[in-house]
Image 1 (tube, helix red, strand yellow):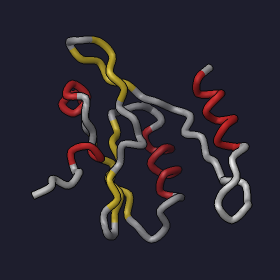
Image 2 (image 1 turned 30 degrees about the vertical axis):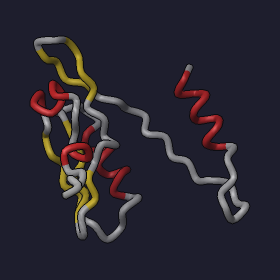
Image 3 (image 1 turned 135 degrees about the horizontal axis):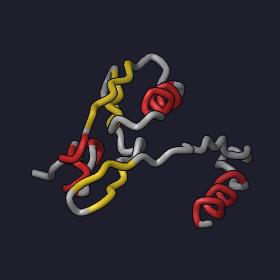
Length: 104
């Protein structure tokens, strides 16, 4: 229900130039099993580098399709699927989270 509401809000939004926003829905939220139960491994917790995009995958049957879909948004960059497995899922962080800048 919440996702449907979010999608409706996003698809009816207008950008700063007066045009409707282009919205693409990522249809799969994969999970992996841990000793504490199921934990999601979201594809959108990716990291964008200069010439590449690291995309978390977990062995879900949709991994290849989602890597291709995300790749369509980043033309000119190489998609690098990274099997994050249980390590990142248990800690509650992902590729994007652990690559954030640390203020000095």
